[in-house]
Length: 93
Image 1 (cartoon, one colour):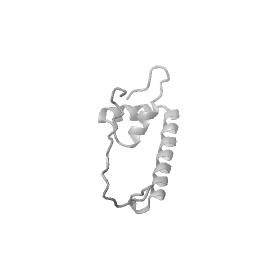
Image 2 (cartoon, helix red, strand yellow):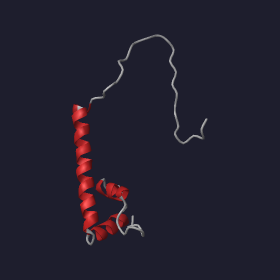
Image 3 (cartoon, helix red, strand yellow):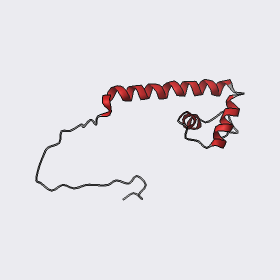
Image 4 (spheres, one colour):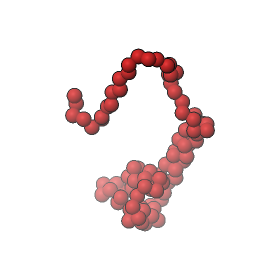
């Protein structure tokens, strides 16, 4: 979670994880230190914070009350069904 050598700025993914409190204490300390001396990364962090808040707001508007939404209606039937489990990490079968 250090600034990259090429840009000397924090990675966007690290900033996102920082905002979501999903980093180790050591990484948070390193990011805090960098933010103390880099206004460009502070601005990027603020932008990411606004984006995450906006996305959370959109998600709340689309699904008020947290109720599940189904695209297709469920139909009761006695016919047999099948279930296909997809694994995105399987070796292309």
